[in-house]
Length: 171
Image (cartoon, rainbow, N blue to C red):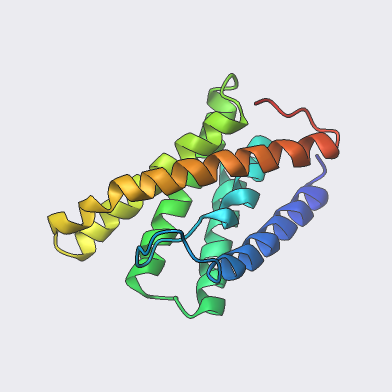
């Protein structure tokens, strides 16, 4: 892919991720869990991984959506911002790595494993911020449950998008 086209696509995906980050903060969860978000803004990160834009591109989109989204939503420099940023970047790096080094893993697998790593890193960062309080680890099953559902939905939407744009979508 031509570098300028790839850079344009990364910029567009970052902008979409930022908008989704802000919009998803207005969509309530079916259960009251403070600080927990749906994770729909990870769709552009997943697309960049599945389209094989590279590990660094995935991380740039994740950083951009977390940083700009944090600025726009007023969450910048909060504990939840650092948790989300850490989880998002770790997940993006892993999803980009998976696409390159485990080509048999499909979109659903990349999405689900990325979500699991995202949630795991967020809980570990929360544990560090709260001084290794065990209470935060009770959140983990809820995060994994919501993350699993969202990751599946994102993979389905991603595959629909890829098929509609004539890309090969591997489930």
